[in-house]
Length: 406
Image 1 (tube, rainbow, N blue to C red):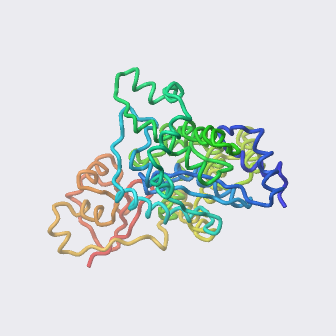
Image 2 (image 1 turned 60 degrees about the vertical axis):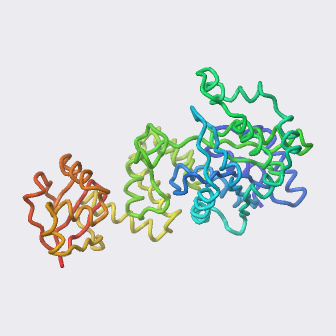
Image 3 (image 1 turned 45 degrees about the vertical axis):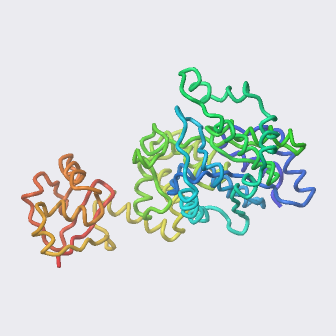
């Protein structure tokens, strides 16, 4: 059995803040004594159903807690999602329809089990209890918190000072999220640092309703591959968990050196003691950061594609990006003579056909920037290029395909 101190070390790995940290050990010991798993709460408003590594920061922590024998209750906010979380908003957010929420939830839950232990996970929808509250129940819930405290919340305070409207229903969002903790009797709630107000509401309301307060574990926001901005699909600085193993590996190799340790802490299951060793090696200059980063890339791919795929992705990376060779298992893009003849630009045609660009204008931009090569030669005037079957198309550093003309 894993000691309590060892559990605390694993649970604390990468956490930005634990409230209250001194209660965590007591909580673990109490649950051990009662011979029951801790109930780990994670609330999700399914507004962004495609999961990338930034989303997995809290999910990996949930999995680590599951591996320690605890039970996760994932609360899909189908009811709260119809209000919309006002966190970080300069104005009221347009509510989602129930159909939109449920559609997103189906996509989200399908991806969750790439990370979570299905046997130790319970999926709940908070409409199960929130939709049953009477108006009297809502008034009683609202009486547990003051407007003064609510206005301490940064986004509400900023909107008030800038004379932007704040609607009464927005005050209900954190109260309802806190009520979720009451309903499932959460022992621990996880969230990002931007969710601190909402997560602490669960502690406050549990106390008001005579329950033992949950521990709040707040995880940092993960910077994307640019090393500056929050990981985001819209910014293109992300690694998606559904991405091809080779793309995932090569993207991981672009992580800035100063974020290597943070990525180890937040998106892998590597033990804290091993990460401390890695940090010391980087700080002392004993090892090349590139070698540590290759290990990191392998760890990330392994989590979502398995050990064998991770090793294959590493070999692919070494072949293509370090040796400059063309791999044997290169992807193929098939195009007909008719398609090429009908196209005004054959190179743009195959770039689009290979899925390397969403539009002709984007393909032209890539060519103009020198990011497109045919057989290793940069394309400057794509309209003058005559393509042949077996030519190798390369777009950027990561994408490569053999052209097959039929």
